[in-house]
Image (tube, rainbow over all chains, first blue to last red; front, side, top):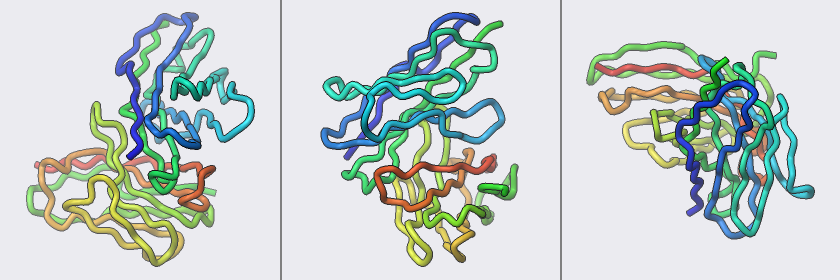
Length: 114
Length: 115
């Protein structure tokens, strides 16, 4: 069965700091990768996704993620965070081993201090 | 276009009580899902419905039942609530389900406390 690991459970940064959140998955075949974000008190929404092509994917609000197949990773990055980026971030994987039902990581809580 | 809606937003139950969480989507999506979100556990799939008329168990189905009433609506029922079911419940939908490019759209959640 596929699994998703998010190594950073809690991250605290100051505004303007750079961000990188780790995501690793276990499935060895073709995968589709997602980052979802949940702002305080709100529902989850899609931040960005990778299906194929350029492994560097750009999403909303200045976020990007890089798919590195050899490392089974899909890390999320942002060069300069803002207070409004405070949220919980979830990595998810669709893979044929899971009938393409997404498997979610446990989430990373990001707090950005102004 | 409301997307995915859920009712109620908050609910407190006593152990042994039953209740139904309602979910509806207006995006003409084929697939719908119920997740629970617990601190440090991320999102865990309870049940899903790949298409109208079908339902399947997810990772944590025990203690729950579902009904796909029609294409728009997918309800989650707790027959005899237990404190372990205290959680935030999210409904989601996707266009096709079971397809590699499927993206999920989430509702606002229901915060359930079982005393």
